[in-house]
Length: 96
Image (cartoon, rainbow, N blue to C red; front, side):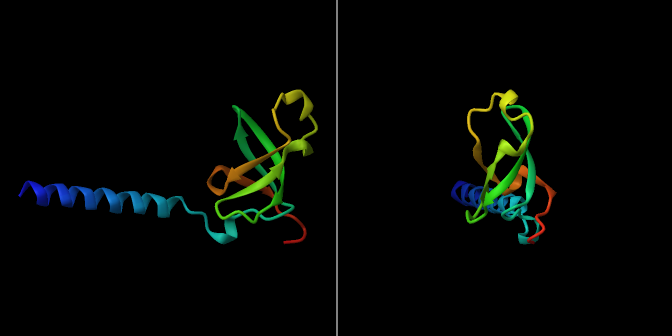
């Protein structure tokens, strides 16, 4: 009986985890593409960047130097990778 309860608990946990993962997936039409301007949080700051590569499955590569105050922000890098779940699209590229 204890084994059945343990098995049921493990199955329930697995289904819950899978369900949560499915909810976090971003629809294709909501993903940024090259040239889009996105916003996201980095190092406690709201950041704006242009997408330079969208070939990764779960994220995009973007360039933050488009911000006029990039040099004053004291960010360590010019480019970064952002998961699809962690950004919002500010402006779509004219090429889309």
